[in-house]
Length: 464
Image (cartoon, rainbow, N blue to C red; front, side, top):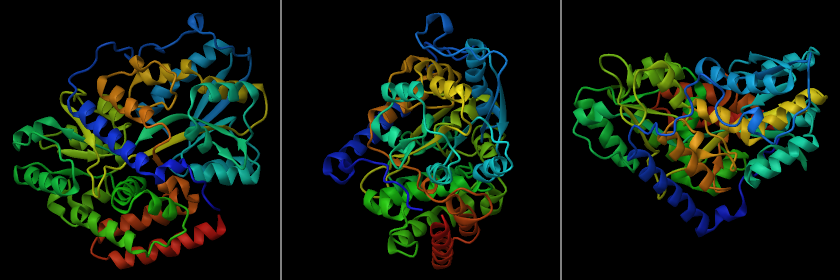
C-alpha cells in the first residue's frame, strides 16, 4: 500500500517552510505566556456546551427507536468527553448510541468485527493507512450528501484529502491533535532556576540536565505505549531531515537504513540513553503507559518536569491531576533539532461501516460546528473544524494550540506511523511500536534498530 501525500506542494517552497516557522513561533508566544486562562469557560463538563438544538440550523433526521454503535480507541476522560457529543446527538435524533472502546489495536478489533458480520455503525480510525486498507476492502461507506456538505463547509482541503481514497470521500476528521508539544511543570522549572523553555534540541538537553541536577526527573516517557515513541521519532526526524525526506520515509520510498534515520535515532539516543534524565530510567519508561506518564509530570512528591505528547495531554492533566492549566502546567513547542521546530499533526477520522440513515446522520453531526463546539468545551481535544467558535475551548492554553493548528491551514505533516500499514505503524507489540521500544531499551544499537525497522517496514508495505 502506498500512503497518500497528505500535504500540498507548497511544502517544498520556502514560503511553506516560513509558514511552519511562523506557526512554531506563534505557539511559543501564545502558549508559554498564558496564565490561568479560564475566561469564557464553557466546559464545566456538566452540559454539552456549544450550540444546542434550539439555537442550531443543523437539520438531522429523526431516528426514534434506532440504536447505533460507535467504536473508538478512547477510554477514561477522552471517552467521557466524547460521550457529551453522543448525548446531544441522541437528544436531537431520538437514537440511542452505544460506545465501544477498540483498544490500541483498532484495525484488528474492527477487522474481526467486520469479518464476523457485526461491525459498529461508525468507527474512528486513528491511522490514515487503516482508512486506505478498509476502503480497498470495501469495508467503509462513502459520505452521503449531507455529511459531505458539512465537510465542505467546515474543513480545509488538507483535512478533506486525509479522509479520501482514490477520489472518494470516506471520512471526517472530527478530532485532531497537535503532536509537537512539550508540557512542563512550572514549579519544577522554577526550583531549577529555569525561566525560559528551551527552543532547540541542544537547549532541551541542557534544560533536562539542569532539572535533573536540581532533583527532578527531567522527562516522563510513556514507553509502554509504543505509539508515543513513534511521535518522539517523527518530531526529531521532521525537524532534522526536513519535510521531503519525511514524506519519502512515510511512503517507504527511502529505507529505514537511510543515513537520515541513523541521524534521528542517534539524536534520540542522547536523551533515551541517559537513565538519570528519564523518570524511572529506561526500565521505568518501558513500564509506563501514556496516562501515567502525564500524571508523573504533575503529581507526587518528586514529579517529572516535562512530558512530551499532543494537546490531548490536557485531558489527563484536567482529569487525573490537581495541576491548573496555564499556571501549574504550561507547554512549549517541540524543540528545533534542525532549522525549524516541527509541526506534526494527528487525528481520528470518523467513517461509516454500515449503510443507512443513522450512520450518515451521525457523520453529518460530527462534521458540524455544533458537535465541534460541544466536544471542544470539554477540554483536551482540538478540532480541525475551521468554522467553530474558538471561545468554546476550555482554556487559553488549548485555544492557543488550536489557533496554531487552524492557522497552519494545509501546512502540516501528518503523523508518519499513522500513514503506514497498520502492521508496521499501528499495532501494539509489533512493527515500529515494538522496534522503538527495543531501541529505548538499548539506545546504543542504532544500526540494529534501523535493520529491524527496515525489515518490518518492507514486509508491511509489501503486504499492505
